[in-house]
Image 1 (cartoon, one colour):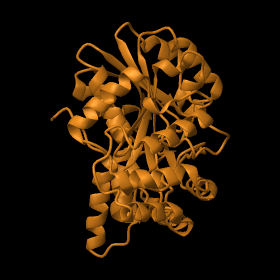
Image 2 (tube, rainbow, N blue to C red):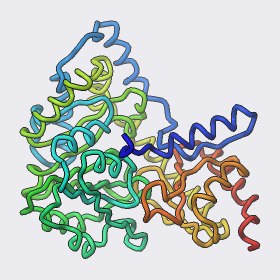
Image 3 (tube, rainbow, N blue to C red):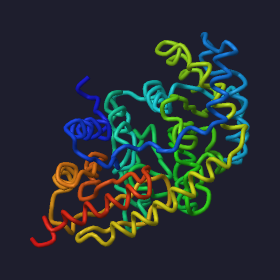
Length: 384
């Protein structure tokens, strides 16, 4: 159990709520959760499902009609042929990471993953006994891999490569040319790519490219996606993976041993999410773009802050080295003194040190208030 780590976002949330209980005003920019309500037509579908009796066990792999919807959606959006048998429906997207790694990894194996990156990647790699191999994401490259470094880290023991585009915590995306080169590098190797595409619909500069769409890559790629971010359904716990049939069998076996099945009524809501109106997603993405532009412009006026413009997701990853203060110390200071909850970039890996992640999944007035609060306390470092 000591090998497992936690998500700092939830730890900071607990501290922030404790301060609120003491009467403090806190602006929450720590948690990666859309602040929009779940769209009404999806909620109505969930209610209908309860009334129609979708309250019992369902198939371990997911309801056939949802798997068909997912297969159609992924085929259309990634430009690849997907069958329902390749789809595994799970309670939230994390089990796809968990089950895939448990099924595939063991001592002696190596896994390449992005650093900074989602903390659960490194946590789960270590838990399986495999060796995490971090590849630094470079700000100068829009927080994409240096492909020469990537090549140098590949060995005969590399069994999995984790990609995340758009990316948490940086908001960066892997350019199509780099993705094509990654496919060329990996195509003939005996490994699996775990492509975390949970933010695939929140991209501000075109549509992100999935590595599964390149020739020869679908049969060695796990596409991880879900409903939490795209449809603001974090509490519904509904995610899925699309993968080769031989791996889907293993994931479903782990699923039946751990969860039995995903809640049936949430799956019915998921069908409506995919098949129903999509204007809610477009509106949310447009609002996130407006917030992104505003908060990044504001943060760039803070002494010692440098905020690159993210191309996806809803995170601003701010270089704070110019403040002369350790990023963890600064994140704590902003929570305690400014009432702005944010995350130390070092919580996402060693290469995140010197950065702070701000989630702009909050209202525009709150984001502007957060910038002003930070500005007011910036004399703590600007006069040093």
